[in-house]
Image 1 (tube, helix red, strand yellow):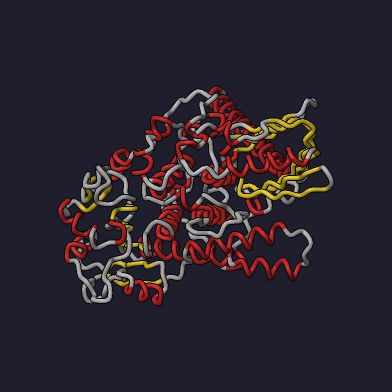
Image 2 (image 1 turned 45 degrees about the vertical axis):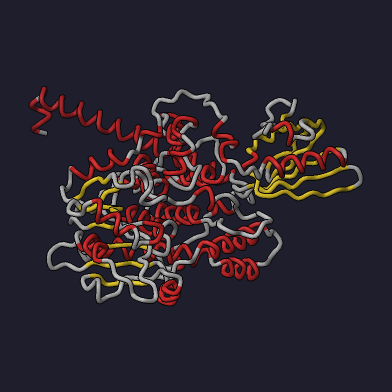
Length: 549
């Protein structure tokens, strides 16, 4: 298929662009296979380059022969294009609709994008499982890297290499995979260096109504326990939901078969509920006319902050079991690809200072989301403005980023990265020139040959100038476990995402620049103090009289 077939009118002059808090721009609108571009002949006017894949929905309005297109984006911005001529407006809108809803992944922009920057480090090779395993080997010899899933035949959503207990062979893993949802047998998620406890993740056990048992599964998870120690199974579903799953062939670990494990149920919402929550939240944030009471009631009705609270609470519970109780943990919900990953990754943010660095956080996203099989292609195919009924879309990753932002806000000096890094990841998960978030699993990415055919987001992020932009000027390495408050009054609306396009950021930007200036000035003064101290020490050694005084 040629993109030209979908573009009825490639260019229109005299188009006016309206954006919140920015002056209107008149110029030429051009449509290409992947971009909507508006350029002006005026000096010092910023061009608009918008990926079609970033467009969530469009609305058309007509006044006489003048047409307007309201473009609603997946990054939550809303822009208006005034187009002279009804025919041109209709042609442009139908072209945008066709180009923004392409089904074929191989037609997406990452396959056509050629970087304008020098690729210093190939991000596709930056966070390989075998490299992460070397770090684990330096701490313990109780685990091995299994190649049982090399051809993705055991579990379609797992990577080719997974860390499992050393004493469990591949035949056992194959048997366990038939007992776990989607073949997702328990694998290592995190090893706590301080006390040797571990966190694993999996899909739900397929016990069904008959209480099916799998001794190999019991052997696998018991292999992670220390002699005389108990473990915790954190099920991200309520008891009722877990009970209902048995009727569909799923279920939970029966206490009689797992006597060394205590099961705890938490109420994390399913993906379809989360999508509805996001839609309600964005609708509330975009309504400029409501009173304080109406705003607060709409915010509460969205349940977004409640979802943030529940996820953080569950992550804190997992971290507490590992760090304070000295117990190993197994986390699962139903599939093990959504709420499970929110909990395991946030627990690592709390426990492991490495995950609070820029590179460590990239590794966490790669390990616990991309390689762990979170279906990004499905979950991020629509955002908050889509006119179609949600099927598989859900802001699972955005909720995780929101939770990270809450912890960052409470511990502003403990993270090497700033809010901009989290916003950047949100944007690229939904629409990107990079191939990192394409596909639903490692199997998909292998089939699409993404490392050979596209550029990794990490190649862009790890350039010196970008690292500097994403760095937190307040950062001071903190090796301690950090315990965020989950009290309702401690959790705020993430304005940097949800109110980003609804208010001017001028004052915040100026305050941030002033803070950076103060920090730099403080460093200069500190260097001067150190220099003067050295000079004084040298003078004292040269002149004995100074020492006496």
